[in-house]
Length: 591
Image (tube, rainbow, N blue to C red):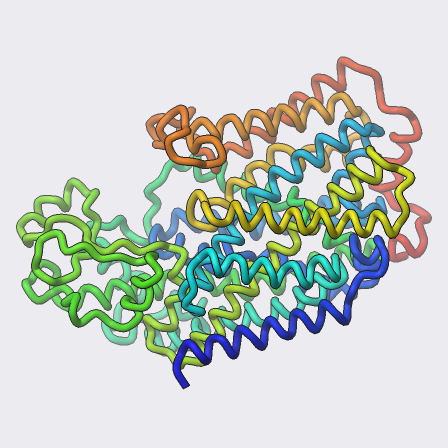
């Protein structure tokens, strides 16, 4: 059986599973559509949260970014994992205690203001739309390679799959589909990693293999990798080369952005009790850790495999580089997608893959007869190409294809539900038509979901960057707008509606303005005001790191405005106290 047929069979079976679950778990009420009837077991919810969380950015892009940058991109691991701890400890139980369906609903009720609710909806839509672009990018990359269709067709297929199980099942269908998707994606991620770890280090546990010895050379794996990349002018893999201040801000932005992501927070509204929300967060951390402990090993080993594939002999020797005519099949496969390309700049028929931006290495490259780097590799292909690079069996390659799609589709569905719920429940039901029937609200939610899917598909056709980079911007927006409002809403009785609205607007406007200044309107190149280079960044702060600064200004604006205006009503202060100290709540608190 050829590889394409095998890919279609495995991916088709996974899609059939998702459709079957959607039909079985069809939502029949708004409670099931928004919160799965609040009947999801904590372990299953933890697994679904893991799938909701581990998006295309985690599955497809993160290891690629780590592979091509090394230690400096470990910020993705630290920020995203740390953010889940914040979410579990500071937000999830209290928001579940409040007992609402959506994040804007909590903000609207806590700050006793329809305006605050509408501002929260705006923030949610901006965050979720930015985030979903990265997921659609992942869908396009995966389909383009493994199902041998163009990116547009791939996006349309992926959108159709999401449409069936998300519009039909709502949160109930999405939850149980995500449980299945987690099983698919974690299996697809770890099996190739185990094979490759055994091949390179003899250790079947990838995180241990990362710190083990390279079988062929006898050197520690990371030492061998450092040696290979520095010989070709690249920065050392294990060294720190970036702005430490910016690195700190970026990590913080990912952390507090994680804790402020609406599509993740609503997962904790699906469990029966507050205690279950804590357990769900704990289980989610366990399930996420399985992938996040493996990702650094995947990145390092894949980078070494790629370098060894291209650099077949001594650096600078006439026969040291791979002949293009003898390139392996995996390079040919990915060339067809346009995500990997070769340009023979010196006409020798061999592939030179090196850092031609390194001024210190330029003289050596000139001596070797090299005229510039000739291989361009899109970082989003690395995890998907990894099994082919390592020459693993065809069924492993097919499994990775299904896993990449599962990761992208699971998160896309959660984001689209957050958008749909905000429109139908927080705008139509609460602002424009409070008398709408439950049946009418459910229909509105499904129509809103359909519109969100169409928008996400359109935006996915023109993504601004690698999946993880696009997603990082969404985290910055969540950090600057939603997270401070939730924290102050739970832990401060003094912050009033005027302060919350001012804080969210200040944080959102500052962050969006900063991002647009350097990345352009809707991230379109050529529309940026200033070049997106470290020399132009304010105090060396990158657009992806600015969410932390936006959060600080959000807190400050909310505090200053609240101190200059009236205190919240007493019943609101009592509400905050009851949410934070759940005395006498019986079954609602898990006591």
